Length: 265
Image 1 (cartoon, rainbow, N blue to C red):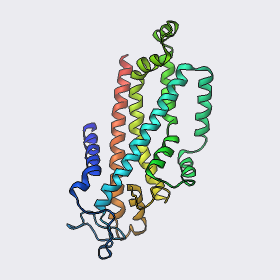
Image 2 (cartoon, rainbow, N blue to C red):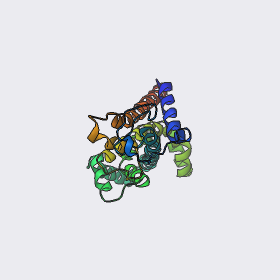
Image 3 (cartoon, helix red, strand yellow):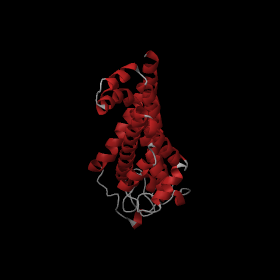
Image 4 (cartoon, rainbow, N blue to C red):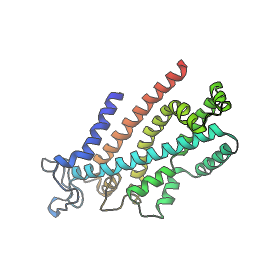
């Protein structure tokens, strides 16, 4: 299953970033004579309400969705890694401040916090990456903090502190290798979550602004014609499903490997 998931993800990335090199139809081209055409040889995935080719738009929209997903997941996981490891290593007042900040963010449901922030700015790929990162680092940080407490209690860490070894050296040399599997599991979960968050915002009309497009905006564009043109919403929804399903499978596999290593140690 992990091999199949990796194959699906690699295929979707190649499709999104190199597809237009082989499929020479503009995702922005309007055609009044080709409105809501069903999938055919001329338009393999059909057209939308403005006569635009769905396949070309899926390729272009995939670039934006994947960039937002990977970018926001990387930043959110990195923030969680830094803050969580610092809280677990330094403890005391640093940990207390960490707990207060995390509890403050968790007071509000993540998606409603996203809605609040997006409603005050014009959404773009960069803006969504920043906003999703700000609202998505807490879970990773709590996991990293919990694991950091275990590492800090180890005798060799206490010996290193007594010996006066640099705190940064201890964090990067001894903490980072142990925390890396948790980071990668959180990252893979985060990519899928970020793509779903962007899609949800776009479906509500608060995501990517035209002429930019994402899988979420394409899906949203077909919600009013789903009864007569199912293909407009089906194919972007399928892409979102394949990416998130594959990432969940990979995350579960990485988590199993991490758990097995912990049992062996």
